[in-house]
Image 1 (tube, rainbow, N blue to C red):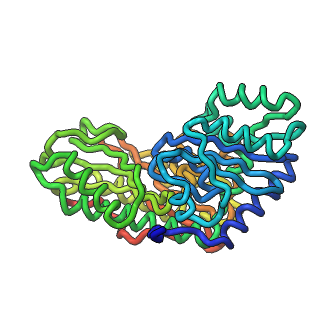
Image 2 (cartoon, helix red, strand yellow):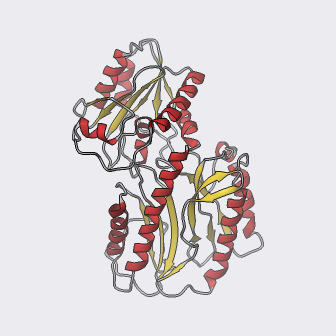
Image 3 (cartoon, one colour):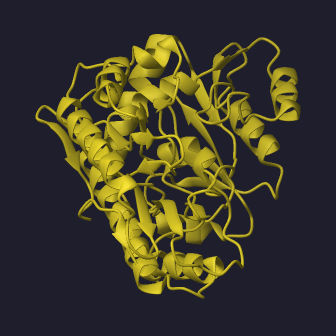
Length: 393
């Protein structure tokens, strides 16, 4: 078969992460992890299966059975030939299709493993980032319980969050590649937006710039555009034509073999009005402080408190925004008022995040800029190259 031209991880990276996952499984007494197919939230919810198998992308469904000490199995959508899946990676040899009865396929593999009195961990059962109710279907859960009445079904979402939290060197390079895609989208936005051009045309140019360079889809572009008085936080683009004075605020994620770095950028059609200069200065001070403090050991709560304090004594206030980057919204996520557990989460070397504190002031649109970073002993290392600015188009 013709070689599949796409980035892939090495078997050394597979062995690194499989050893880490199995170490955590042994600590928790879990005999096997079952990861169901799910393509929600810009394909982010497929992260559990893709992390374990290297298979996925383009919203194609893949499930996984990951034993503590046996061969890993992927259950794949039949729309793609099995030999094509094998060409995408060399991690998993046991690739099966059961039509679209993914649950039946995973249960059949579990029966082969003779796990009648085992502890079965379900990835994404609860507490999924951005989806607290989980991604495991009720019917599949009931079928699994009926098939293994003597087994214990448990949640292993946090286990995989911990495994995915710190990144290997190859993962960091994939994230760097995804940020390069996102920055290409920003360049396309800058080249396309003019008075009279529609939002849809600009959005299409941004997406095309990423796909032409190799980005998978869906690739998220969170879009907000309009006058400062009417600007809302995010939404889809429309057929509205740009007007002088419009503010554009976007969050862009490229997808480099599934990995999602993010860039957050603002622009104005014309010149930045004087009232925004002070907000921008505060925002950049917040980014700089947070980046300098982002070292192993500091908690997200302390980072938030110290970053938000920059706005004290000014007409502005800061909302701290920082969440994990990887195969989607890797935990942890600190968005506005995080719970106590998230506030206590310590940073570790080689964890990756988007840092994007938001500055608010009554009567003005929010000011935000951000880049994906990797935590190092010397502070945050940027993965992008764009010079921080509110772009004037």
